[in-house]
Image (cartoon, rainbow, N blue to C red; front, side):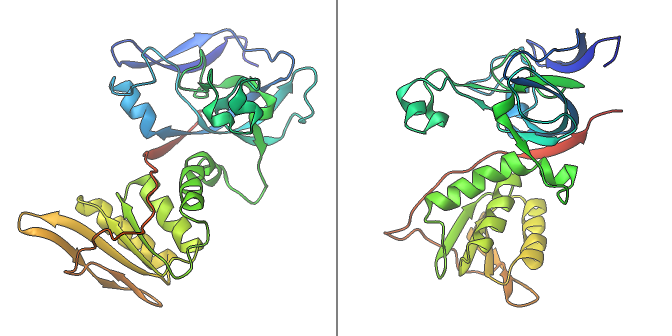
Length: 270
């Protein structure tokens, strides 16, 4: 560890973003010290920095989409130093009725690491309960591993929509980071037809490129113009990624789920 302390990112009370140096953290019982490798920048971080997040007050210390290496384990921790990990950021009490029933994401006193906790993961090193660490396979690169936490949102949304989407049609509203990950997951779930609604041309173009790469499913891009809804098409390797003139409408019997955020990533400085 550095004799000069640990650098961590702080979002100030008026939205200024800086770096502060704090004493090196030490893991207590049941906790682990993790050295940061990669941190994702979540849409929640952007909203919070601009003072527009309802549950993340400023000032705060960001960082919850993380990849790192365990450097030290507190007493009672079985994870071995040197293990590469990612983080599940929900910190639940474990005692309320929701936690006891397995729904710890609904914990009455839940905090969220890197949003509502005193420290976050955008730091040289951070301490977190060891049961919030997930070991990563060696074949998964650091940048890909940083997407595990945001990818969990689309995976959960598709599970809520039924899991196996074979033969079903899916509409995705928005082609930001989470929307693109939903596109990947719905393809994996064997959806027969996917419509992506996105008003921004750059995001539509990226969604089309993803569709050509990922999908043998028919994919339609839909957006609005002054004259009304529009869509368009482009060829794919084995089927169609499309933008055509027939907008989709929601029919009775459709099931809706919500998944939203945005994402970018930065590597920790050496």
